[in-house]
Image (tube, each protein chain N blue to C red):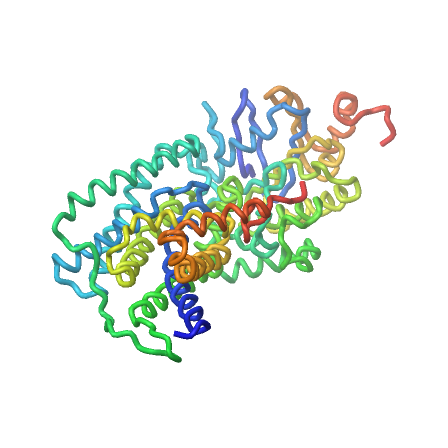
Amino acid sequence: MPDLAFLAFLIADGALAGSIYALVALAFVVVYKASRMMNFAVGEWTMLGARTTAAASHTLGLGLAGAIAVGSAAMVGLALFFNRVVLRPLISRSLLSLIMLTIGVGMVMRASATVVFAGIPPRVASPFPIEPFVVAGLPVSLDKIAAAAIAAACIVALSWFFHGSRTGLALRAMASDQQVALAVGIDLHRHFAITWGLVGVLSVLAGTLWGFVSGGGFGIELLGFKVFPIVILGGLDSLPGTIIAAFAVGILESVLAGYLDPIVGGGFSHVASYVMLIATLFVRPWGLFGRPDVERV
Amino acid sequence: MSYGRIRALQGVSLAVPEGSVVALIGANGAGKSTLLRAISGIVRPRRGAVRFLGEDLVGLPVHQIVRRRVVHVPEGRGMLARMTVLENLRIGGFARRGGADKARELERVFALFPVLQQRRGQLAGSLSGGEQQMLAIGRAMMAGPRLLMLDEPSLGLAPLIVREIFRIIPRLTAEGTAVLLVEQNARMALQCAAHAYVLQTGQVVLSGPAADLLANPEVQRAYLGAGAAS
């Protein structure tokens, strides 16, 4: 493969992975925006979304759409339950204890998933042909393209939701100032629940798509670790920033995996996003796309 | 007609009639803001009732109270700094249904505060203090308030701007809205209100037509800085 074509291949491959990272990162950001709470278990949520959908597919014999629908219903139910029963009573506690709580919940999820889903394949088989097709001399796998297209559609839908819908406007108001949101008549609890519902759906979609492209080899919980550099680079509460950072991290990883991993040994590409994160924070402590809090008082 | 009837703090009882401006003056810490917070449901009074159109508001969640068109403009203006002026106004109408009503209300707000129309695409955080206060009032108007509570609208603003805002306050009652105005700037408040209450350490010590209070030597001495040139 000629050099330039190899680079193009790596970039395209990275962008495809980045689109799925973006979905997982968005699941983190919607909760953070609405409630300033950091969900350190997004990786586990995604894993559970994937396994629930896989279980629906394999045990109920559903097709892909049916499995996603059943998986989404189950995960939305779980997310709403978690929000109502676990988070709501703790709402006035320190953010730190909520963060610790999410880590604990993540551990419970990992442990229980291995028990509950024992013997069930962990992913839904990709419905797309395995044979890669060749574009301009580059092999492109169809399931990656399909996964990226679905991810992109979700991102567009979510952006519209936040910027074009009444509920999205309310969620952004909550992100900006909860007291004001309350004063204009927004029911905060209801909208916290909506963000968790979104987490449920996003975890199913991201987890299932990741299953298509990863072949199930990669520990899906580790997706959570990819998300932190992404959301911090993206500025924590910026939707466009998150999406751009997700693609940047995906491409960076892919390019480094192609060029550096053969030299320095496999695995450096997984660390690369953290190196980029640290470098960025030295220059822009508020992230690439976040804004320092400057306003007139 | 008594529009809102309030019993809070230590036996405080005041009435805000439809379509008029009622001022609540008093020193810092007299309990003025607490009273507004009790009415809008942010704090819950231990005893007593907030009666609005015959219904007791005590114990209702804040968003339910806003839905009953009781709207509070808190002290410090509460800007959604990273959202545009227009988005701030749109969120003001959140609790209200009916797109046509909201569009008409928006026209009204822009007529009252033309500067908001000019700056509608700008981020709220970039407005001047006076413009932010106008936006805070405009946002509350978007909810179609029947009782509008303004907490210290003059806070931190230059005298010229304060005068401009107080010129507009009486016009807010045009559609029957009752305005309950809490102010430390007693002179401005009494000049634009019809009726006023003086709150001192959680109790109403004086009340009456605003013009009478303005002429009252006691009020002049304690709150208007009598002796000093107007």
